[in-house]
Image (cartoon, rainbow, N blue to C red; front, top):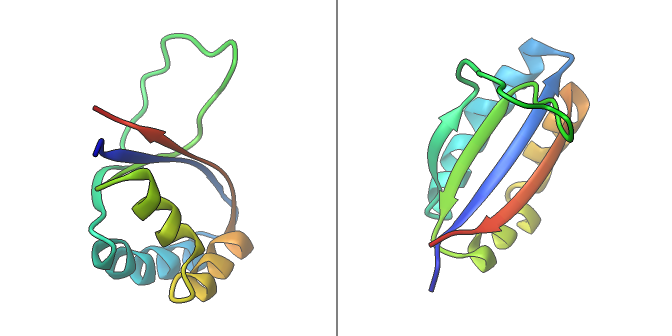
Length: 97
């Protein structure tokens, strides 16, 4: 079964609340077997005709199904509400190799 990568681009409006979100989300992500590969590092944009990212997060999961399960889980729901209050985001799940 191929790995899956959750790609999230975030524009943060409330950095204090977003920090709380990050602290609460990390153990939940790890509970679902997720591994952070990128978490808001410096960006080098070479070409941006279709998309101009703000802050990227890349999380590896065992499969697309596990990544979807994380996003829709009851345990993540209240933490997700914090993220939605503090930011805007685009989230994609892509199947890997």
